[in-house]
Image (cartoon, rainbow, N blue to C red):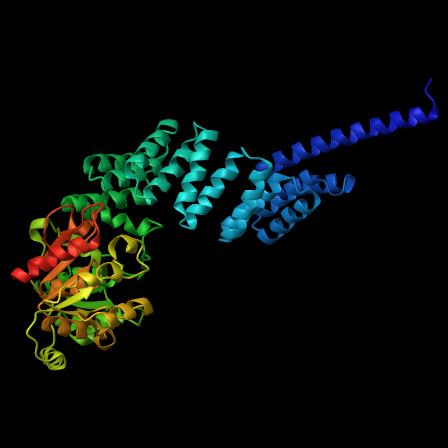
Length: 535
């Protein structure tokens, strides 16, 4: 016989066991319900646990995860924070809150929480991997690489770990190592279509174009609606001059989430060359950057042979220069009200509509012209000189995704501007640091505030003997007018310039200068100035 005290202890222990079993059963049931999308029932289970054992961190974690699934992010964050207040060793709460901070671009807070997670649980793969992703988003690629190296060690058969490390290698310019890691990711997950796509881009960077095209094909075969695979394949075919294939694939650009222009719903059929335009009105409209519009507006002249009316929708800085191609009454500012039309076509779909090959690019010598009155004004403004006048553009659009690869720091080239020429900065705006460099230079004059739109810039460039510039809209403007341009290109240039050669079929007056992979920009500038001295 047990004493009443002992019996009480046994009863209490039995009750605790029953409560513990009920708790485990409810947690298991709630997890199953949550996984099946039955959130209300799962929430009821978690609340039942909390009614029995208030402050149960496992139940609170479940409620926090439910709040995440229901897009109640503030509530989820509050719940995870409450768990941390109750138990500062509960690493899952730090990890989940860190993920929320990361999703909301609160990167400093995310890293702090992932650090706390790993201080408690050093070998937690998901936290290491997630912290590496945040470092990548912050462009701290060395820190990201360190985390992904750890992730590979923790889970050596994880395709995602190799894939993420490959991204870090690519951002650090270690393309060969990126290829190795993408290959490992594919080996561990043969269905990883993004790894095929990204390895294709790495192969393209290494100028292994056949391998790149094969990989893009594999990514598409695995995921037939993968727009980036089609788009990257199109760009690679452009790079090697296979325009017949490229322009067909290029139409997939609109489906890519990474494409910078949005697809327009204009309520009229898209014209790609098949329908008759006899007696019809077609709207041509810009997309992507100003340089793209300058390059592809040449096709407007093709419509002179067709019995139709052409309207053009274009950005304001291009409107006046486009009067070389169309009457002002047929040119409309982007986003303004438009008259009625029967068909529409984006400017960069015109090469497909006109079945363009490398050999049939129209108007490579010139198709735009500067205003003679404005040319005379600029001649008077610049006055007499005994030296050749050279325009200089070192910076493209800073918002361009590849700006770091195509633009140059003025500080790295300003001392290489030879005194044999009068140099003129054609940048519309310059930073305070660049202004100091210009003020200190005896060779370079900044006239950006006087330039205005492309109509005005065209007149100024006509007064110059040549223009030296990076891959930006000024190069297209001068090429479209037929003015001499010396274009500075990175080792892997934009696909429109192909992968090799000093000449481009798009502009007969443009000379391409390609930087060696590890060479400084000023060495290329010195080469150009040596050529200019001989002309």
